[in-house]
Structures are given as C-alpha cells and as structure tokens.
Image: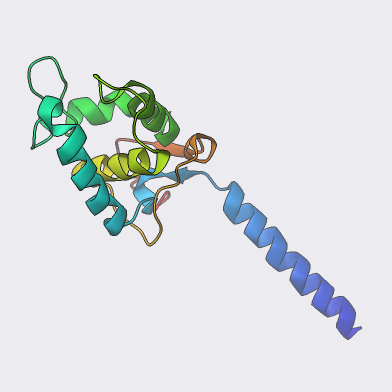
Length: 146
C-alpha cells in the first residue's frame, strides 16, 4: 500500500512537471539573466552600436532596437524569430559571425533595453527552444505569462 502511494505521488509530480513544461512561455517571464544582458551590452557596443547607435535608437539606414516600433515588429512572433533574424543577418557587414552564445547575449540585452524582466537563468541559444517563447508587446493583465 505504501509503495502504491509513493508511485501515485511520483506520478503526480511528473505530471505537474510535464504541464509546467507544456505551459506557454513569454518574454514577460524573465527568460534571460541580468549577467547575460550585461555580456550582451558589451557585444552590442563592439559589434552593433556603430550602425544601430549607442542608445539603440538607430542611425541612418539601421533601425532603432528599442521602443514601440521595434516591439510591435516582433509582437505575436517568437523569441526564436528575433534570435534568427539577428543571428542570420547581423552584423550587416559580417552576418552569422558571432557565436550562438554571443547572439543570445545580444538578444538578452535587447530584451532588457525594451524593459522585459530578467530572471534567474540565461536565455537559451537554441532556436528550437526560443521558438516556444512568445514575444508579446503587452504585459498580460491577469498575471499570466509572469
């Protein structure tokens, strides 16, 4: 009887973990760490600021990377979409020349600059994982996604 109770409790824990993993994630759930965003700021300053501006406000042909226009461009897409755009096309004079970790750091910096909250863990560097994280411009009013 005790073994059955242990098996039942274990099954409930595993089912709860599976549901937690299946729950949709969003940019409002702290999907990057502060440390990662700081690393991303360094990479940004070295490799991106010349075109996008030190304040991420854009210069000439390069668009700004903060504010309503930037956020609305990715609204309803995934963090994977943003990551792949940056990874495959930036820096413009040498696309795909950073490591996946550096691209993840830069995306973390962009999320921080757009006031999405940080969390305890760094942003993943795998596109397939990032594709499951919703980029939503509006913070959920009911606390969902936090």
